[in-house]
Amino acid sequence: MAHSSENTIPLKEEKIVGRLRDCSPHRANVEFIILPFFKTLEEIPNRSDLYEDIHYFSSMASQDSVIAILTSPVLASDFCSELNNNHLHLKLWIAVKLEHSYSKEGGLIQSHAALLIFTRYKGSLRHTKTRIAYTYCPSCHRTTKDYGGKKHLYHEFGTLMSDVWRDITVSFSSYPYDIVRRLQDLFGLSEYEAVNVYDQRNYYKPVLHTKHNYKKYPIIENQYPEHSSLINGDCLEELDNIPDNSIDFCFADPPYNLNKKYENWNDGIDIQAYFKWCDKWLSSLARILKPGRTLAVINIPQWCIRHFKHLKTIMDYQDWIVWEGLSMPVRMIMPAHYSILCFSKGKPRPMSGFARQTHSFLERKALETLSENYCIRPTCMKIRKRLKHNDTEIASNLWWDIHRLKHNSRRVDHPCQLPPNFMYRLISLFTHENEIVLDPFNGVGSTTLTAQILNRRYIGIELSEYYCKIASERHKELNLGLNPFRKNGGTPKAKNSPVERLKKQKYEVSKKMLQLEVKNISKQLGRMPTRDDVSKLSKFPIDYFDEYFISWGEVTAAARTTGMSEFKEANKDIYQLPETRLSFIKEQKNLMLKKQCKI
Image 1 (cartoon, one colour):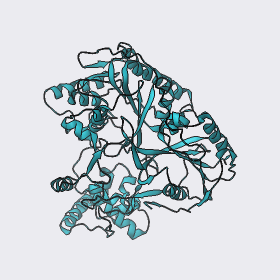
Image 2 (cartoon, rainbow, N blue to C red):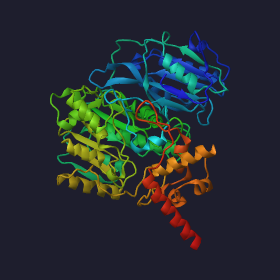
Image 3 (spheres, rainbow, N blue to C red):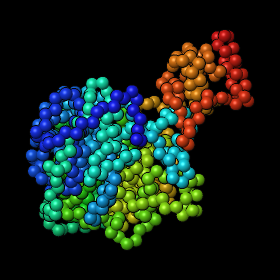
Image 4 (tube, helix red, strand yellow):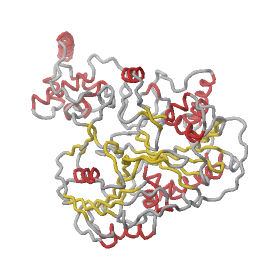
């Protein structure tokens, strides 16, 4: 197994025979329902009956039960969008890699299934602390991710589990042993006894060879506009000025409305008002799209479900792309799954990126992805290139190779910026050169800048005059031949994290040395050291710990884990500071103590 759960009491596995509607769960357990992988909604036989069976079954389950459903993204989206009861609470949408990907006619390779985790209770999901083992590059045999100077802050086995599972795969033609075993450990708590498995694949077999009834639109295309533009204004008002059937690709990265916690998308008046507003601009984007073209919306899975509910009434489902874009580690199952929900206006045209015969260099790079587990260390990449390693493949609908902008030097003054490689891929996939790309929430211009670089026309709408001005300045830089995504050397004011920024300062000792010093003290004491402990026992002045770290939790971070190595055998020896550096530090500490005595 590729995971490790702390303090787990592995649950029993019970295979329950029979149709779901005839089963009556009574005890608090993990109820695991396996459904077929439906490629379209038309393939689902008696959809309303299936949903009714799940609702009835879940209503019979214990108030402490977990209900897991394995199926395809299109059924998962539709079922969740129709959920209107108070006894199922969606906690996680986990994307699980398919063992056998399949090609979708005219579209992306389909590479992931959906594992929905519901609870009967409303509180936070209860589960064990589970880690996923590190993967290693097939070429250099080091960890796939380069942890740089932070290896002392990570666990020797692996990283905390996220909601994208690529370390195991699932096949819908066989029994999902790996998923069952993971559920047994993940929910191995004293309150549960078993993972009860209800395999419903024989009861709801896909209806094959069903012709898709695409929504009908007049095949009229308006030519608009002649020139690209940035518009400072309200998107609802500005979209009204754009003619029907005139845009080739619409992309939206809306504000997520995450200042408040909600159990479901229909939990309160505020969230209902938010989605009513979303429905309006989604409808406007559908109106201005040309027939056969695509609207793509990025959001967290729970919000994409609500977008799905509205869009399926006016457009046609095209794809659910998963971006493994790890965000803030705010819980023990780290949020990494961002959804790019794609709907087409009627029957989608063949995907542009795969239909055209020639590609620019940037387009070709955007349509490729690194093969599984290869690292991006420059030295390893050079060796692979020299040895002619085949380390790339065509991008599927599971994106793991595009990373967030983590360094302030590549950010401008906006809290939520998508990486340019993300937009290069989307625009390369869905458009041809000289076609029109529209973003109603253009922010500081990531969409319109990448569109211009790829030789597409663009319309960027942004409510904030400040952000619109930044976008305009960046386009001017691009016109002068400068890279708008270059390192800029500044520190943006805006932040996408609640953690404070430290002031820029010279570090007499690296933060790593200080954290490892605290780890040494922790081993001496046999417990987590306090500030007073460190002040008395450290060879470093306590001022360093106060000034170089945001919190005491950051100071003790290395003491709370084992540390890891980029190679399979971790070095667990106590870190020793070089003697030359140590003598300098002792002098600094003595000077500070003398100053404090004089005061």
